[in-house]
Length: 602
Ligand code: ATP
Ligand code: MG
Image (cartoon, rainbow, N blue to C red; front, side, top):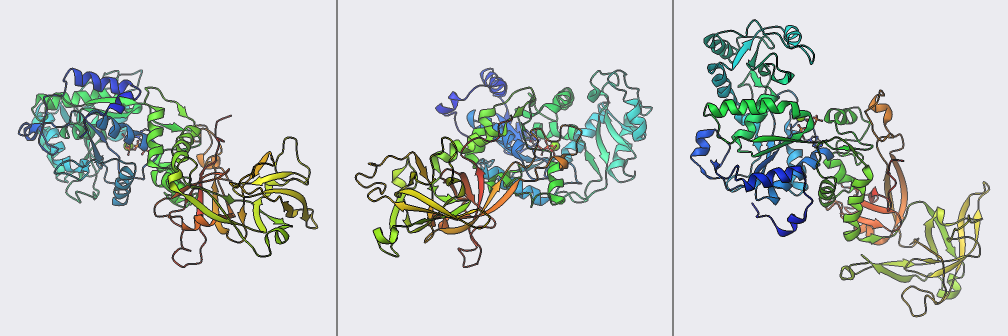
């Protein structure tokens, strides 16, 4: 619990900040008590004044891996709590027994921590789980029955659907709507005790079948489902519906601002109806939490449906949840994204009340901004062509290697310098030689001089080609007294500077050049199956030569570099490094992003 820091006050305002600031000013939640853990009205009444000025929550359903949309929600909820002296709860919304798994629970915990957030509070470092509130949810349901506000409906699902009406047509009362309280209570207990088969009955809130809001037409709040739950095992064969469970979870946890995506806007009247009734009955305290909706994140070239991401994994279109092309947090991490870049992204896109698409280049821009300031530099040649210095032996002596160095980071001299060799044979990029230079081309062509960055100036002589006319080797002469950093080295002016590595100390590496996973800017929005919109060229693997400092890259630390001229790269957390432990494998680097934006929608 931090007091708002001064720098936070500079953050751009948005409608959620305005709501919170108004509530703090009006002391809306200033007099709440906190029982030290989630609980009902009595539990909190015996507690201390709530030390958290506001409480928010991030409530994932543990049925998949978190993605970039969740990252937005995490940064938003944890960020607001941090900025306003509050607490944000991590809560597993595990009320649906069928699709949930502890594998997902663990990965969600890791992802939230990796993003830089913590839910621990004094005396409690465990995340909350909605399934711990099943007893209370059941008790609240009996209370609603006793208050004449809920009934057991035994219409068939088809009848129920037909009688619900639609936007144009009011609903029709169920014949079971007028059951007595005693009969409802008895029947609900039979549901709980396993006397009715799955699907034979539901408990419904008794509100208004003619409401213009269909969600208020007696929504179902409990269903019968025989399924083993990962937390409660076989204790229950009835489970609460999401719309009923969620407001209760918020209330028991003393949440003040319950922030969700826009599709829940029409559920808000039921959220308030339910909590108003439970507060009247003395089961929860007032003022109860309030729901606020914001636009979910849509990112170009990306899909964020958990179900569809799972399909990509299950059908082998990607190598797993952590494939570097996946928009999952584990995928983004392996791709080389940093927590700071995702936080910056969340802040930059802000929160709004209307849906829109955010350009992928915005996300990449945040990554570049973060990494430019801190990533060590290195030289790498991704598409190697041999360069031979024909006068080397004569000038430097046969077999000589010349020591060169470069700053680890141009703006951080304290990080020191990296060392590498210059020699007779070097690797350069294929595109750095042209026999007939196009207009404006300043790199190698016969007769032109260029600087090999951090090395010497050379003059291109010619190239050796194979029978097919392909360039096999470029030949050049070294211009004496031009070594970078030595006096007079810049006496000869050149227009082009190129990157290189020496054949003698370069390290071969596998470099994975990732591109967008989908070929269209708004995948899964038209008539086409989203699988047909996959980009067939989303991964190109090359064998590159990298400077020797990169052989030390620590994949465990997600170590990232700027390969000069090429962009940002990370040592792959899974496949890099077998060479470090004595194995045969090469270093493996993933391209996070190029130096410049190539994503903007044209
Ligand atoms: P899916 O429908 O793909 O399963 P979900 O929204 O149901 O996703 P949850 O686990 O229920 O996934 O989401 C947890 C929280 O993350 C919710 O509060 C939800 O509003 C938020 N969230 C999910 N997707 C996005 C998104 N694309 N942008 C912003 N917030 C999101
Ligand atoms: Mg959900």
